Length: 284
Image (cartoon, rainbow, N blue to C red; front, top):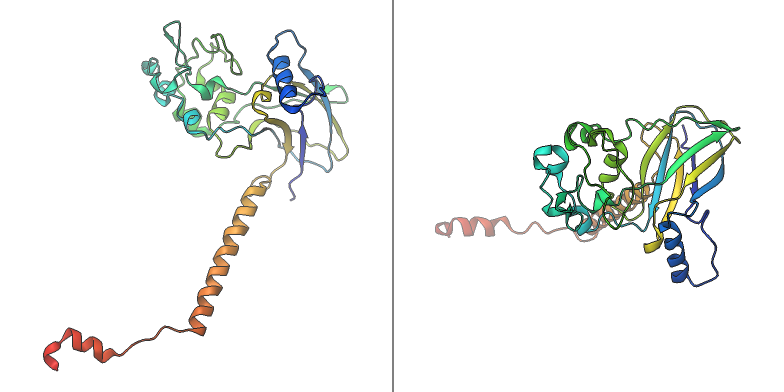
């Protein structure tokens, strides 16, 4: 079965167009996103190129976002995420560690920058249900995030980084956070948003209502919406294919080089009597 994928870049939608240079344009866009009074609702249409058999996975993709930066990755407290008794263990989380001398739960820049764009899907003016359960790793839900750890003082400072959390739900049940906290190794990455558990037919048009809240404009990042099917070996991943072919090609080249070197200039076995002389000098 072939992977079917639809990718739509949407960070330019519902943002005022500007004829200024790129830096000024990004500043204006950042101000637009940061203004609470602006309408950030975007509507776009996706056309399904081929039949997509359920489950159809929904991803958001961010470009030029360095989740692998050393200081960013370290800005979290795994002890605090696991147990309420480590609530005040916020030393690794600075500057997002305390608010009015009260610990922030979850603390750190990773949680603070939680992705908060939302997507709604419709077909022929009927809502298309999105299953947002079981999108995080099971090991994260069971072991890394406590079932008795609840958000406190989160996103209540003077500068808001991203999404809010439900203070009545434990961290282990807030799977958007769990997905985001598993940091990506590359600056361009995708994270699972949910699943469509209905087949999508070829040439079917899907209306997507986007709340374009997440501020990638301050660092020149891009945002994309991706819907994709998978096969038994997973989804589409150009990077892994290129990496495997490159490494395989290098190994093949080295193997051929060593074989030719051995054929053209074979290694000399030497004189075995010389070895026996050095081991037993009394024989001479």
